[in-house]
Amino acid sequence: MRDSPLPAVYFRLRDDLIATPRTWLITGVAGFIGSSLLEQLLDLGQRVVGLDNLCTGSRDNLDDVLDGRENAAFRFIEGDIRSRKDCREACEGVDVVLHQAALPSVPMSIEDPLSSHSVNVGGFLSVLSAAREARVSRVVYASSSAVYGEASLVPVSEDHAGAVLSPYAADKLTNEIYASVWEKQYGLQAIGLRYFNVFGRRQDPNGAYAAVIPRWVEALLRGGPCYVYGDGETTRDFCHVSDVVQANLLAAVAAESAAGEVYNVGCGAETSLNELFRMIRLGLAGYEAELASCEPVYEPFRPGDIRRSVADISKARRHLGFQPEMTVAEGLGEALEWYVAQARETEVNPR
Image 1 (spheres, rainbow, N blue to C red):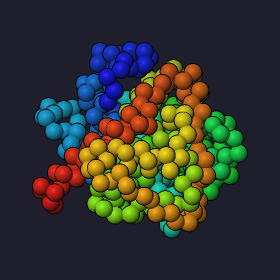
Image 2: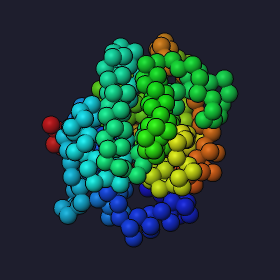
Image 3: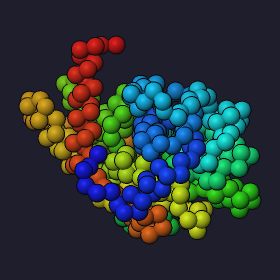
Image 4: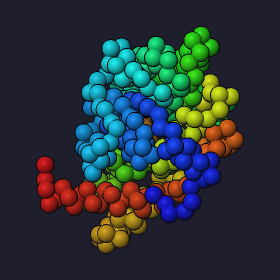
């Protein structure tokens, strides 16, 4: 994390949470973002329940967070968000739900749209229903920039959700509609966060649908090729996970007038894949000098991919007090240090 001062609103929020702890449910707690939320909440002395079926999450992430926290107020439920029983158990006595569980892959959703819908929509409805029954004060849920499709205007603002390009995007847009219905019909306060491209430590480099940063880092460290789909001028808004954590906690305690809305969560800057590759290569060359000469391998564009993506975060600034603290370069520095340490640990202690 950066040593610079936290945004004033977030700083006050952290003090308030320490003074008046709450009970939180994190779905997908063993995942990359879920475990980062868990780490921050435990640092702030909160009580946390975690729900995860460990399909895409990992016990290693939980172990990493819980190392040295023998007295942490944390209860883990290995369960599925599609199960009403598991969701009811997880929501019991909870003040706020941070819903992160999902199958977050555009390519996978194209290959298997029914499974994507079952988890991303069916699971979300189970969480909403259980939260309503348990009288949870608020649900903050992960949406996605995928709902914008091929936006004609960038940076893209929240009122420009358009023609979605994948089943995954359709799932997330459907969730936003359901959250609005649950608020209108049942009074359940919900806030959606449209994540752009989140990155940071504990992001899994393995699997066919791994995000681009951990996938390229893993490939470079192992001497393999880094594939770029298209000409490399595709752009994304890369947001460090610490800023995603900030947005979730701000949304959880924001004024009631902020509820019933969706907010972009990004850093508000556009980075091309070519630029990103150069930054990763430069950063890794500091650990292994021979990586400085590596070049990517260009492949055809993939179906469902969006050409340009960057967030207009002015709405989140106004209503949540959101202020990103990590630039892409700063966030990569932290993430690369972690990935290199993990790679070296694996060499010493292979699994």
